[in-house]
Image (cartoon, rainbow, N blue to C red; front, side, top):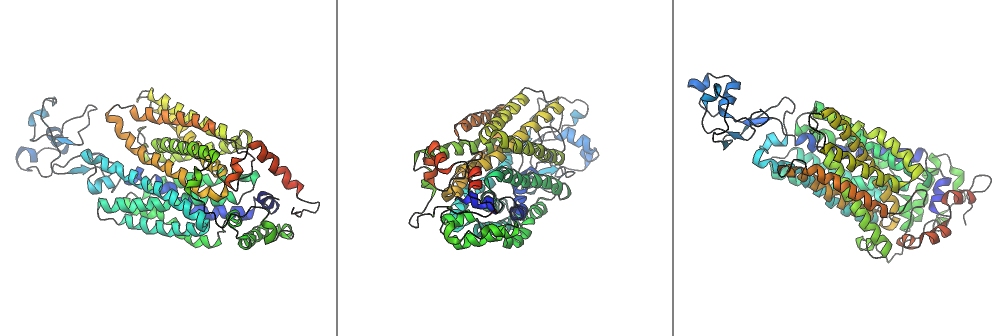
Length: 551
């Protein structure tokens, strides 16, 4: 019998699996808080040149604040004071004549004054990352996601080599150290370095937790596992908006969103190792121990009577002791090479589009906290629909459809005037919900496509490529100086192109998880003939009194 049959017999969807999901929810909710943290800590409030150095005596000293701005700050096309320019000398004649189009201007000479009504302190106000230094502000998100990109293959390799559980604890502890240190940064450079390493370690939490959860669920409930785990992201997203509303200082906000990891470290002691990984690596005694715990918690202890550590070796072929799997194995043979290329493109496009939309919460003219919250809330009904769609129609049509529709929503908003902000917001929310749905499907889909022996390597590699897209997404927004609509056009084209690439991937609905690379190199018909219907086979290997007959 196969491992999935064993898992079905001891209930691959019971209290034990619920415990795994709940324990990991504490850490997974911190992921969106950090991944979208730049929406708040790097926010740029309204600002103008600091006029405090000008002589307060004489005529200028008798002017109101509004009049001072009129004679010292040029007006932009939209009628608001310039954020980056000032007149070299006060232009008192502008009090009676508002035409300043021919007057010379210079960059701000003495820094800036910021509107602190929404944000008490941000990176922009801390180190004056505005005007000609605004690229440095955007770069903080890129640096963070480069760290996430580097951490994905690192933790993918380590968790395939040393196990899911141990590497998860390493990721927890390292994230707390780097995140808390970043909150006490004394310079821009120190902050960027700490954020880079925070990204590295958070990537470990991201890719290990999803794989560990899915590997403990049976075939019938893998879809549910993928969707229910993704709800942690939605909850964390809404949590970020709520915390940011009450904590408007960037240092304390960073500390606040990292704090749940303290509880995650405590609850880690109840978290099991992946029995599937243990068996694939020849640790049959430990695998049997965790399977017994699972059976006991799920009230299926009788089912373990016929299952011994020795018989478990027949459930999953043991990995060759001399064979060390690595990233090279992802391109060594034809089918897995095609899989690696297609999933790499898929992750790049999905992540690029999702964060291109998510990091633009000021684009609809509404309150940033409210926008962040409804951006998160729209994901909930989307994920519920994803669950039913994936169970009925499969992963491939869901992945292709959500990406094509996301690109369509972005294209529609390109042609909608800014004045119709209500319609733009509705279309934008649909696009955001669809992009999140594509992300949810992608995580589950990728986990099912790669064999156990290289699953973390595969997820690590694809996450690496995806974070490359995330790193570039914030910088694409700077292209609006070339053409205002260019960023949106790029996001839409990438989404549509990625959806077409997803057509090349195989379907995984109700298909047993592959254990070795050879499992996906075999022709599909041969694999089906060898394995049979996994749901039916589980029944055939169970006798009348509910115990397992190991063959």
